[in-house]
Image (tube, rainbow over all chains, first blue to last red; front, top):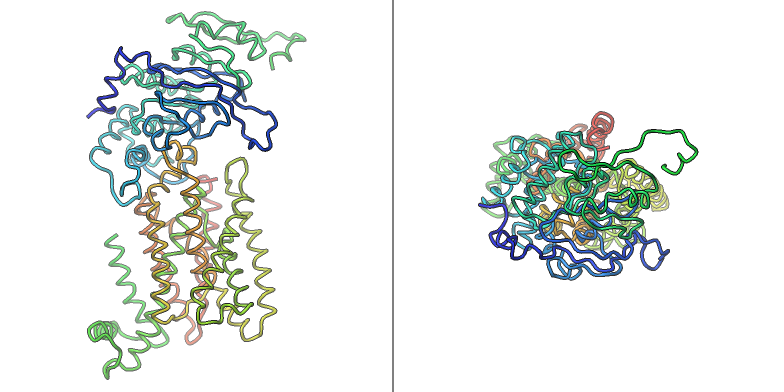
Length: 299
Length: 335
């Protein structure tokens, strides 16, 4: 049995390769309720598309609205203004459970205080496919199909040997993989990742990136990921969306976005940019420390 | 579940033997089977012992089972919703809110009518719901519920409410205030069978509705945003479960006063044995909590015969140190 339905494999073929996963139009959002509106837009008038089957990286300074945008795409937050379509359907009008069958969201941190096993956690991803049945009320156990989908998700993230372990005993990298496995058990067409490599060491960062890349290439998954790491975005994303103060500053290939002028305008500091020795994508390096009076500009 | 159910039947039979007068197991089984066969107590063989057993001990044991099951279940669901293994209706001040509601009703004379059973639980519900809302608001900071602010909110609310309750008891007539004090400390008294039946329907109904949320509770422990991204209408589930918790706690407090720590100790122990899945944790905690309170009440009845200790004192003496142990030595797990 495949992790994804047959219809999906057909859809990711060349005929529909240009189909839009998301169409976002004039999206606006702020955390205060509108009645107390202070013109404090976290996401301010965004318009862009996410192509089906691409990896889109969302980057930008702290507080530029990256995570909020990701949560809006997951419908975890509701926008105040604007419209979003998910594979042509109006996201605002879709029931939460329909969104969950299409989109899986992995937050930056998933603190767990109860000792669920890895397998139990991954099986939670099956919930949207059983909504409204005896199963979702908790009076049924998992079907053989659910178990086999969860086992494949574990295999994909290399966690099979930890299936019976408590999530509280996992390392940071293992926990992140466990949350990705839970997302895969949702059988989504879109995967939203918030800082998937934050707090992870080099080896675990590479593992997560390899999983994301494989998901795109083998399963045709659309991935939208938020990252602080410009080099990671440059290396692993097909396109990069650069946010500045909640607004779109630049959207394009890594070559177009990871550019000294763009970074100076957005982050307010000068960096060195050269080429990755293997792939040739832009690579960002911090300049050597020079005690000048302009130091403050960079902080 | 089956072993637990068998164990609780065995527990009932064992506890039936203890009391101011020892009744042997053989006699207990004789009397129980006689009553089950004949459907009445009118018989030479049964006698006074039978009356003690069937009219005093059995209903009280049943009440203990019910109350313990409810307290443990409410503990389980509050812990899941607040994502905190230290949550407990007593510690969070829900019980004292409910007690305040009930004490007010007694003071105003609403509770002394025949309808006591149907009105007092509602007053308890109102009080419990009020304190849940206040604790939640007080502890919430930046969308999170940190353990320390949660406990602190519970402590503050508990002290305000117990001051109010003490005030209320101090202005009652002396004979009523003594009874109210004993009730407050957490006491089980043998109910009549019709009263027990009404209470059982109400509480078992509530437990069933909680059980229907078991899988959603599992997912909510991932955090609200993750739960919503999995297709759960989190606000609706939270509202339902909080309401049910306050309803159940209100009813329990109105019949048995403030019995503490059952809702914290039992879920913790059961989770260690059976894991965190609420589909199993919830019913198993209900059974174990029922047995725990039944045994504690048997101790309360027999330790100082013919006098009785309020069972709330026993559960607090057992649960308090456990709470300290969790807070001091296991805080790495949830702080």
